[in-house]
Each structure stands twice: as C-alpha cells, then as structure tokens.
Image 1 (tube, rainbow, N blue to C red):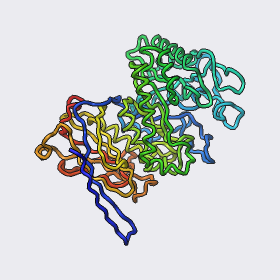
Image 2 (cartoon, rainbow, N blue to C red):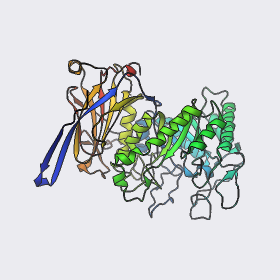
Image 3 (spheres, helix red, strand yellow):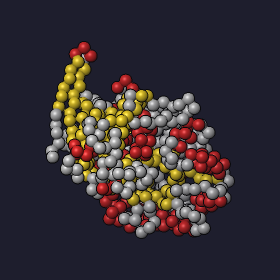
Image 4 (tube, one colour):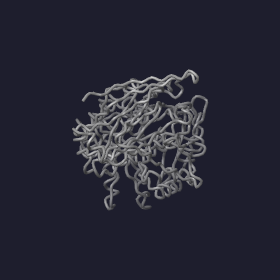
Length: 520
C-alpha cells in the first residue's frame, strides 16, 4: 500500500498566520530488528571545565565542572535518579592534563587559565581522593553508571617544538594507584576510557593509532590484574575522538580482539556555538542528514575490524565551544538531539553520551537552578520508552517529519514505541501507523488497548523557550524538587497520531504484535 498524501490548508487573516496538514502513512517493518542498542543507551557527561572557562565573551561554566559542582544539590541528585540508571561519562578536554593526588603525586594544582600553555589555555589540574569520595557518594546514592576517562598523555612528550604529536609510551602508574584506591573503597566503575580527542589530527594534541592501540593493551592488562579478585571487570572504551577511518581502523587492528568494548567517537556537527545560523540548522533535515555517513562509517569500522566491540557516541553537544547560547538550552535543541538519538541507534550505536549533564550552553540541566532544560525530558522519555531493538520505519511524506521506531521497553505483546519529530513550523502531520505484517488492520485495531502519547511542545509556540509542555502541561519541578511525573495522553488506536508543528511525539503502540519485539 502506498503512502496517503492529503494536504489541507487553513488561513487566519485576523491572526496573520496559516497552518497546513499532511496525511502520512508510517510503514513499520516488524519481523526483524535492524540494530540493537545498550539497555542504557542514554548517557550524559560531567566535564572538568572550571568556572573560568569562557567562549565568545561569556563564561557558561559557573561552578558546574567536576571539581566545583555542588554534589549535595537535591535537584541534581533527583535528575540523575529519575533515569534509574543514568550512564555518566566523566572526562573532557582537560582530562589529559589531570593527575590524581595519590601515591607519588603529592601536589594538587588547580586549573588556571590565561597562562602560556599549549593546550586550551589552561594549566594542569588535579583530582583529590577526597573529591573522588564525594563523587562516588553521589553515584552510589543515585545509582549512576560511571565511565571514567583517564589521562592518556601521562609520561609522553611532544615530538618537537610547535608540534601537536605526543610520542612515547603511556605511563600507567598514576592511573594504577587511582584504580587501586577505587577498588579498595568498593567504588564500582562501569568502564574506563583512555584520553580525549587525541585521534587522527586531534584537538590540540594527537597520538598515533599504533601507539594508542599498544597503550590500550597495557590498560587492558592493568584492569585484568587489578580486578582479578573482583566480582566484575570494567569495560574499556576509546579513542574518544573525531572519526577518521584510517586511524580508527588501525587502532582496532593493533589493539586486537577483546580489548575495546566501546569504540567511542565525538560529534559536534552544528559547528561553532557563535554561528548565527544555528537556529536554522537544527530544523534543516537536509543538513542534519549529513552526519548519517559518519554513523554508518563508524559502524562499518566495527563490523570489519572490531566485531567484538560496539560503536558509541562518546560525546556530542551539537555546537562546540560550549554550545550556542540562543539555541542549546532551549526547546529548539531537541530537534538535532532527538534526531541523532534515532539516527545513531539505527546505525547500530550502543550508547549516546550528551555533552553535558550540566554546564556550558548545551547542558541537560540549567547551570543556575539545576532544573531540567527541555532536552532533559526528551532524553528521559527515550530512556523509559524506547527499548534496545531498533525497527526499520519509513514514509514518503515530507522530509520535515522524522520517524524512528523501537520495540518498547519491557515489551509484552510485540509493543513498539514510535518517535516522531516535526521540524516544520507550519505543517501538522496526521500519521497512520502500519504494521507491514498486518493484512487486516481495521479488524485488529478495534481490540487493541489505547495508544499512549507523549507530545512535547514549546511554551507559547516559541522554539527558543526554555520551558517544555507535555501534553499541553508545562513540565516543572515539584514542590519537593522532584522530577515531575511524565504521564501520557491516551488515544484510540483507530485514530491517527497528530504531530503539531515544532513538536516531538513519543507514541507507545500496545499489542502491535511485532515479531521482533515478542521477547524484548
């Protein structure tokens, strides 16, 4: 059956506005899944940037970096707890100039900027074991799943003056003492990562793929030895950099089977945060499609050279240099973010780490109040509704309607969840879903339970609003500073899904009878 395309136009001269609608048939291939994510696909980062980190004459990291963050803030803890669990990656640009105050390291300097140093304009910094204790108290209290990124430049030296290439073997001693302390305290680390953005040409520093692969083997042996008597063993991730096919492929070949669990790459495809065109980029489906090739290429590298590992987006903030002030903390940021969650999962990525949980102009939480920004709720709904198995979905309607489908989390009767993203500011999409196995849809749907719908829209229709509505109700913290309940609206399975302009819709279709979801 071909897609139905019916258009309607309404004009209201007294309001000087117009609206259109388009009927779309969404075809869902339900027999087999096309990819599979990790159970905890959603991830967020906590960065090391100090308050003095500034971009474009603004300083958007006011005591929200790892070393200054208020770990006793109730809203912060509740925001993490709501995911049950939230995967958190600790690291960032300054990790490769960070030491851990333990063992032979007795001095613990603070990050200082405006100094004559080579990387990022900051001096070296340090994490004390007292601060590590405080962080782990938070992680234990909130149930967070932690990735810790280690300093990969320790022991190396620059090849020559004015070079960005670091040579020599990684010195594991400081990391080893840090791990020993972590084990002795019973702190559970889900995974360790080595270095940040050192692949290929790197960002202010680089390491050759062969050397990095050898160092990853050293790290693997270290973890195996230190955790030999532990009930679990942390996974290893790398290289935490921007994708370069030759570099990534060589790294996987050198490190070899069973070493790397997650092949992590970073994405900032929107460009610099100062770009005045960001507001248009986030709603341009043709521009957003350009990153699909990277997702595909990383998956191919895994398939060809590292089938024992999986592709991860280790860090993605949309726009680099702390994000775009007039886009990133607003509803508009959800267009690219939710689209990349859908796109990356379709290309068999296991985890997607958002930069950042808090900090910059791209945090999921407000840097002043710690209250959730609109993207937080989109991430939370994804985590609660979208299962691990990814389904193929298609329509031949407008490219401004993006669509993704997964088996529902805890699917019982082949339930599926559909994510619909309307990037148009004027067209309402009237969406009918079709199971490609169901030959007689009208006879079955009368017996199905109600459809659960979660419509996310911006306050007052302004996509630059920092307030998001769920089914027309503003999402705000409760009086006890808890995350509000995210309750669905219920609709008849016989009715189409109406996707308003500038909106996102999660729809749970119970009893869809997707064979791919029968045991998920």
